[in-house]
Amino acid sequence: MRIAVIGAGPAGITAAYELAKAGTHVTVFEAGPCVGGLARSFDLWGQRVDLGPHRFFSDDTRVNRLWLEVAGSDYRMVDRLTRVYYAGKFYDYPLKAVNALVNMGPLQATACMLSYLREKFHGTPDDNVDTFEDWVVSRFGRRLFEMFFKSYSEKLWGISCKDLDADFAAQRIKKFSLGQAVLSALGINKRKHKTLVDQFAFPVEGTGMVYERMAAYVLDHGGDVRLSTPVQGVESSHGRVTGIRLPDGRTEPFDHVISTMPLTLMVKSLGDLPPEVEQAIDGLTYRNTIVIYLHVDGIDLFPDQWLYIHSPDLAFGRLTNFRNWVPQLYGQSTSTILALEYWCYDTDEIWTHSDEELIDLARREVERTSLLKGAAITDGHVCRIPRCYPVYGRGYKQKLAPIIDYLKPIQGVTPIGRYGSFKYNNQDHSILMGLLAADNLLRGTQHDLWAVNTNYESYQESSTIGETGLVAEIP
Image (cartoon, rainbow, N blue to C red):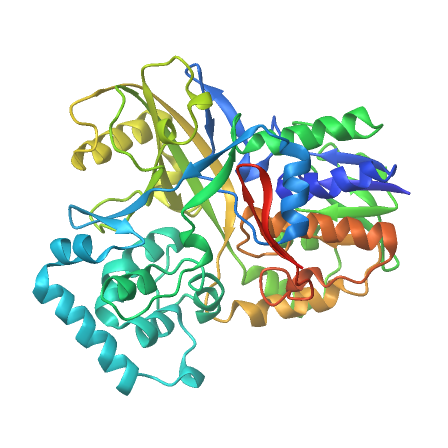
């Protein structure tokens, strides 16, 4: 069986790797110059950087075993330190009582508590909640929503929290639980969530190392990985996918296509769509990211791996310090590389700014935070990533449903990954999708890939990765 994989991000290259291990011929088409997708790594100013902060963590034993199989012993455990920058102050993440009270002050802390209690006893019932704002306010109170959810979320998605679907909150905040961290600091909640782990495993050559090794394995075992080779679409005939179509009009036949290209583009390429599917596609959008790297002549700027920027007067949303991951990234260098993330749509003015304009913007904004401690910025570099965040606009699931229904009877195509399934995946979710997609093809299993990162709970074995490998395994 000849299989094509569109996209060499975590989902696509994992599927290709698993197929190659089984002796199946696989060809990977990657539009960019390297593998890894959003989790790729590259060299810059004599150091190694990722495309923003990428922390791998999973409690799924299948995912962890695969990750360790590829990474081997070439990783280190990183003591996580991330903080929130809000109103000129830095909040520990997860929040600590003393730090929170000093920053908030007793009046603000009391107001947060009262706001929380007001919603708890007099808030909107869950059955009547359908927006991100209502979901968060109903659980944490309006004060905490405005401090720790509103500005960051609206920077990321470019729409009001009133227009963001509550499904996003239900899916993500149970993991990204800053509000619950605040409640813990105030003595209300003691639960610890997945995103708040104290340590995580990080490859010594950057996050992309794992996916580079997977690609090398595919090549060494008879497969093909074609970089800088975008795919225009998927060919189909009589309800079955027959291959892929390249931008120059050429087609290549395949028995099955695993697609991680944006779902909307892939489905459009099938042609002759029912009106309701066309309309649904037009209602789904993706958000772009601009990552601006700054080369700073100094070290020991601040101790965090990354910061969440919640201040509404700053346009960037996250700030990564690559000096604070593993020393193998910077080696003997005596400088620091920072990365600022800006999110936008194609129609936003910032998307069309020149590299020089963007670097100047990033320079001015980071200097306003006083994090540089007077260190000079000597250079800048810009990466633009189109369509990298599926936007969970209000009612998006109703728009996605007819697309999924249309695809299910079509033979020979498997959409996976953050782009390909229109899901806001972490690395572990996308790796799991790749594993399960390969399993379906190789063994005829019927894993529901649309359920991954929502309610996929059919596998109960759990574990974590520690310094010596797989630990805390629960049969």
